[in-house]
Amino acid sequence: MQDHDLDAIALRRVLTLSETGLLGGVALSELATLAGNAVEVELPAGSLVATAGARVAAVHVVIDGSLVASGGSGWRWHRHDIFGAVHVFADRAARHDVRAAVATRTLQIDAEDLTDLFDDNFGVLVATIRAVAARLADGGIDLSPATPAVVGVPLGLVDRLFLLRRQLPFTHGSVRALASLAGAATEQTWPAGAVVARAGDPATCAWWLGDGEVRILDSDREIARLGAGSAVGLVEMLAGGRHRTTIETTATTHALAATAAALVDVIEDHTELGIDVLAALSRELLDRNAT
Image (tube, rainbow, N blue to C red; front, side, top):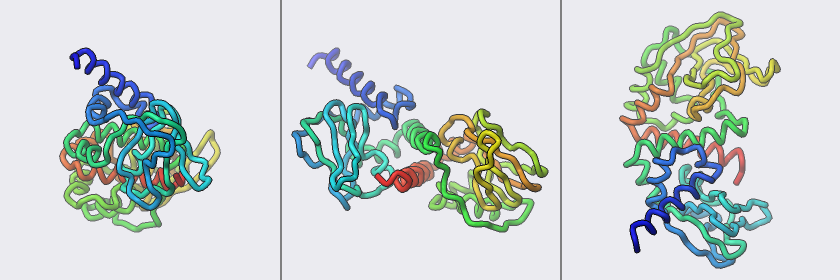
């Protein structure tokens, strides 16, 4: 095959990945790495691509045709939709059989290849974390809040580790990786009535509350209150977007603050933490959407 034909195929694969809802915000350079591990497959109508109760073996990006889940779930994947990525990231089994509804062509990436990519390509891992976090944020989904906690103020290293591990997506993080993040974090204190972040501000930081309380405002309407042990602004920070709500203290509040840049630096040194973060975000997305 001529070199220009190979270049055209690679470009087509990158463009196909870029048009998916999940990976649309990932840089083309990162998508090129994913595309290099993808193959185009032809699926006759009725072909089984995932079995209920079994691990998803491959990610499928629909080029043309469609995939459908059995059991009356109503889930379908059409052109530019991606099936299986979040399941692979979360290491979760499919909830339904998924088949080709008609003759379908997909871009397929094996689950094992995808996992190896994250180990070897830091940029792909970070870009994918942002893409999944953005999907959560776009759906108005924050991570499940922690139960109330009592820690010392000011925060010692043990207190910092305790706060970080209480909240997704760090519950399974190694002590060494979290100690690096805890060491890069700073402490902040606000009086009652202080605005921690306004809707529309760049989400460059997340906060773990050591004590006190904040309320979350959507267009001046209170939608939630979070107390000690909770994380605030984490999904939006991971997504690399802007705050969708305003965060305001209701009492004197002390928090541990970590920037996106600090987290990225830690993930670069501890890839396993990034994989844990991606898995936790993906599980949350699957649980909320029940796919």
